[in-house]
Length: 169
Image: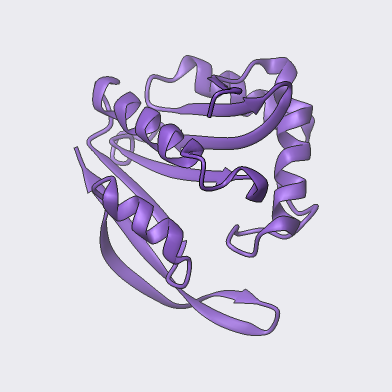
């Protein structure tokens, strides 16, 4: 991880964040969207970054190799009082950079953010049951399987079950 830098997003990162997610949708079948299906446009991504910058219970961490985005992790909580305490975690690392500890580092930073933000008391995430590398990483960091959603993901005509995992802080 020598040449990898981590930081929170800036508004001017919006276009590159979208490009990263659009590409990653085609690189892995483990995301909830396909290539070029990332749901936000540039203005919406900028608004998302602004929201995360002002809300104490949301954040994004970007991993860079030089100026290239190679990983992104997010914690996003709703602003509703009844759901604000539960942060939804999402993470993706480019295939060429997997196995280098980038995902573990991002996850550790996100967990620490949640422990210290004064709002989050639970982190939740979803991952396909057959994504064993991710399941192992999440379990090693303290997440537990809370449930299984049958046939929740459809990939190339094949249904896959999804784990709902959580961590109480």
